[in-house]
Image 1: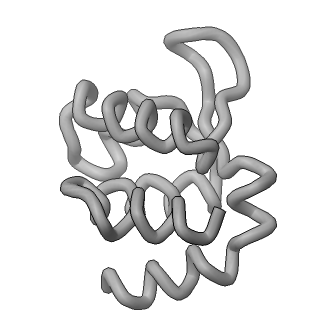
Image 2 (image 1 turned 60 degrees about the vertical axis):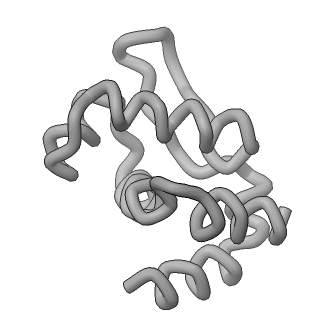
Length: 91
């Protein structure tokens, strides 16, 4: 999982926005629309990044489609020290 986190959050285009999303949902799970507003990003951009994070088991969804809230996955939480290292590097 550690390698996946480094790749998804720093090794690909959009990693900085994925870090911002992950940091935001760590403090409070939110849906895509809330994230778009809070992070001042386009809704479709947020959805794309959430899909990438979900495909790599970094975040999980709770609820149904539009109103679903996102939160860090259990695997991500288990490797949270790595996430914090990445956040420090990106900032």
